[in-house]
Image (cartoon, rainbow, N blue to C red; front, side, top):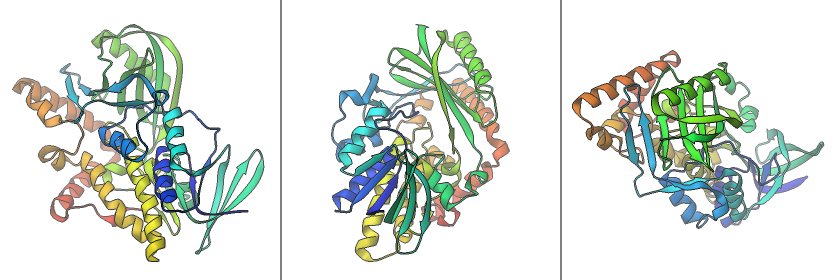
Length: 402
């Protein structure tokens, strides 16, 4: 049995950020990763300015191998059924287009933590003064004894399921898939991430350039047919935007826990087990979760350090410290913050004001029709109530967190 101070599950960006804080504090830290590193990661790779700043400040400049081509992104362009485009540059200039296979590996190595790859998390048992973790490597069971465990293993987190076995039934799940196409003709600006507010295309539809190909992606409630959804999006892009693509060369997809960040239903663990990153439910409005993962991961590591220094329960420290990241993320979905503040990293109100009154009316109508797509989840009243609570208390209620 291996004894360590902290065990982190998942070699993600959240894990790298947590590990950096722990190793810098002198704590023996081991990261478990079920795949062989460097491993493939399903992701658009479009990093926000805030995430880029974190990487620079904590890990240094990114190596070229950690970037796709184009190597940077200027911002986001919103598209609507009315065909009024809304381009928005990121605050602070361009940001990196991460190749997650190599960027994650680079950050993990620079964290200084010991990594056990090809090692799958199996189960855990919190015994009060330590957590006993069972893992599996090449068909052989391994055991770890850790003072604290951090689950940084993504939306379908096995650590979350170990702590809350019924969690998958508590939230709606979505499937997000993307296909890669060689380009015949594509008028879409390759320096932007393109997103469609179109209810007929699905809950989340995007496209952008990568390594000489065009990604066409769509997200929808789990259970729908990915192939049919994708064909519909591809036809729409051809008919409305003149995007001519060859048949896909490859595709990929995954389940997403989209929703917790909208309605403050985050999951942070219990006892000596912390959950962070997208496993907790952090997700920015354009579906970028890397900056949230980095910052929440760092906070989870800091919480472990502080709990040990102060001899306080780690959950007490973590939940107090993570409130700032909850505010920052949930603010992005808060209609009052969107209207009267600038919670995003691109200026949506300013871009809207550049349009004519007629165009603003058309865009507002299209956004409303798109939001109606989500009414079956009954999030509207919850978002409204949370917006008012944020206005009067300055934050979001911890009582809603797991």
